[in-house]
Length: 417
Image (cartoon, rainbow, N blue to C red; front, side, top):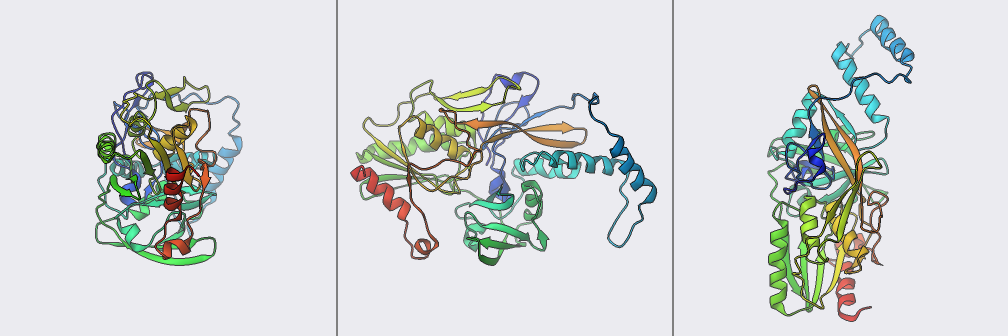
């Protein structure tokens, strides 16, 4: 999703970081970036993506033997004959194709070369200028997968679920497709329909049609259940920090000291919002998350600004599942590492990388440059977070209107067991 304003020291080095606002995952079947920076200030959401102008190094790598590349180029130039459905690309299009192939060879679903037309669509998406179905998507086990349908959106109403594997979008196979390519197909005019061929649970095959619409995403809902105050958190938007503070004020008024934060199906959003909310639980100066650049530049530590808003003696549990990603994993991972919350539910998605958006002429390159580390040094991308108490949420339970994960969390908060 898209995120808050936050300026890093590194942003002033050789590139400008700008936090994007409005989860790309929201509006169209969003792709999962985890971080994006564009412009001047850092609006980090799932991760951050810096954009810097084309002052890039163009010196050839002397160790690269391009003889075979030029052989292939010349054979295609001299011998290729168009057949039904094929075309002869011009020189620029061939170069773009070569750059796409080079980028794809890194095997990272979040590192993508975008031709000018795709770069333009991507820029529109992160600005929120489109309609879609309202689900977050990512690549898991090399398959396009639904991270989470967003609450109250067309995708959720149509029956799309967390963990659904997308085999076809309309009649287009998703095999080898990046999230950016998928978003390009899924987004479209309000009122039009997109059809998904879904594999659910490894065996059930479904066809689900979704009517595109403008996406409006709720952020926070509160309720008291059996003496436990529950904050259900659906996305990390730019104002999530202030909304969470209001929810905590409501919590204090109840007199309860049992707090359950439900992050299930929350695909992330602004990094800065996650750091801000963590400040309600962690002392001032405590590391919430680290951007690890693997020695390419200094790591960036995001620290709590310790607001002390949490009432003394509060017992905290956090619910996560496969739809909890990015900013959700940052918040839950920090509180788990610091021992201030017990994590309950099922394994989180595992989206913990940082991308930069690099302008290359009229095209763009989105490249993974760092990974998120929890305070103890765990990489969120390495399989996500494992709950302290694992509880499955089966299709049978969902069909019966039951919520065993929440029931277990309330039990734990009330009894300690």
